[in-house]
Length: 211
Image (cartoon, rainbow, N blue to C red; front, side, top):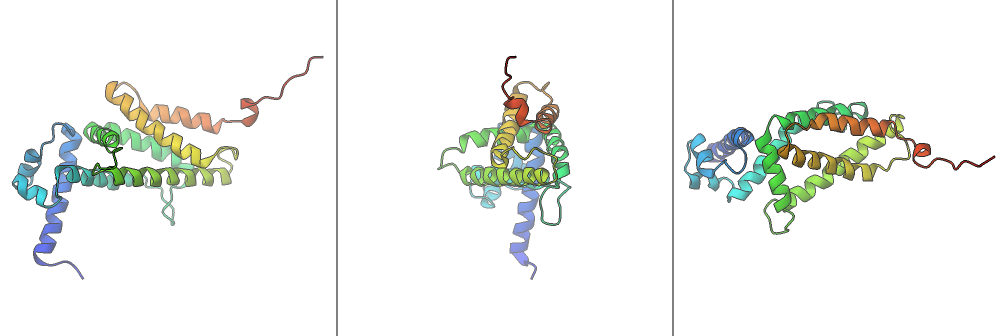
C-alpha cells in the first residue's frame, strides 16, 4: 500500500532535500554547504530541514548514501544476480572515477567523512564500515569471475585485490584533490593492465645455473 497523507509528503520532502543537497554539495563541497543554504534551497527552516534527519552529520551521511545510489547507475553492466559483469569491471571502475572527477564537492565530503568516521562514535562509522566491506566483497567476486574466464591470472588473491583496489581508489581521490592534473581513470587503467600482464614466473623467475 502506498503511503498517504503527511507521511507521504514527508517522504517526498526528504527525497527533494537529498536530491537538492547532492547537487549543492557536488558544486560547492562539504565545507561550504551550510545547513542554512540547503534549507533555503528547499523552502525550509534549518530546524525544519534537520527534522527529517536528526543532525547535520546524519544529513550528510544520507547524502553519501544517495551518492552511492547515483554511482551504482554507473555500473550499468550488472548481470541477473546483481554482480558486475567480469569483462566490464575495468570499464566500470574507470567510468566511475571519471564521474567522480566531475563532482569534486562529493569527493571532498566522502574523503573528509571517511577519515573522521574512523572513530566508532562518529555518525558515519557504520556507513563506512559496511560500505568498505561490501565494496571489497564485490570486487573480490568480480575478480573471481574474471579468473574463471581466464581474463585474470588464477594466482591472484581476490580478497587482497578487493582491499588494494579500494585503497587505490581512495588514495587517488585524496591525491587528486591536491593535484587535479592527476588522471584517476588513467591510473586505474595502468593498474589494471599490470594485473592483466601479471605472471608468477616474472615475479619469481627460476634461478639460472651457470654452465
